[in-house]
Length: 405
Image (tube, rainbow, N blue to C red; front, side):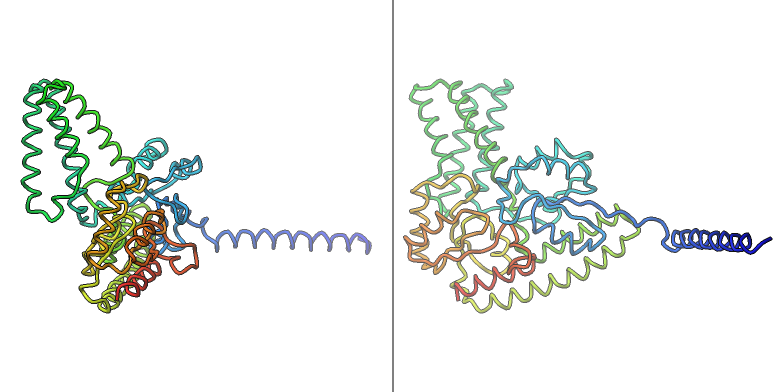
């Protein structure tokens, strides 16, 4: 073999060795790297507060898509096409529930969710409180009127018997309100019912016509509460860090059920975050102690701070928008609230970032109180003073204490 042939053979040998080495490296890389990384769980949340809880529990193993933009009102949000896609692809959909998101979420989930079992309402597991009596009474009255109307329609009782039952219902309500401090407040729904009963008594309307009228506004009232308000239970439980701990444990359990290999990690993350929540609760109680009990009075844009008031010893004197954020109160309602602010000598009215402050500002100006903005149904922008749940609560507490002490 001449020199040229030997050189060619050596080159071919080197090429083969290099190729073999490359194949070996590729094989070893595949072995050392193991199987492809476990895919992340896909979780959709209905607002930024829940998203922050999930991120603390799930860490890097969970991909979170939040439906509502920062600052959006969870009661009136209108979802888009992208939301439908995200929900359809999600392993888990977490909402506050208890009527907070209203009909928009139920409709969206009905159209998009591949499995109803993936849709969870965290509020069901936190021992919710009931709304203030005025709102609860209205919801209860709507339900009882609806039941009586249904009995008439089904032929179980006559229209006249239905009116007798409705009259007895209204009479019992009046007797209960006699000892109530708010018993003299004007309530639109009872007044409408009583007016119709008087028309039946005067013969202006027949019993059947009165039942039909009551059915009409009862359906409207129930639809309004379903779409934009709440039921009897208050959904704003995130203003109580101890109840949030229950939601965090729920999240960890559900993530672990979907991803058993990392279940212990989720539980460890939840335990660590719950310790932060316990510290937050202790810190809040300490800060609130700086406010004299006689000055722990809250007037807010919306009925969002009931849990906070119960947990830390405040009294909710009044709210600008009681049960829904997209129906304005009457001038008489605002005048009565202004009177209460002046009578109780409330130093500040608390507006909310997800609710228009126009009416709250009007009450503040009329009564001489200051207007102070709080974060309610949404976190602030990332990196801001309310960019996480814990910093949001701390910011709110600092502002409340500064305004009232």
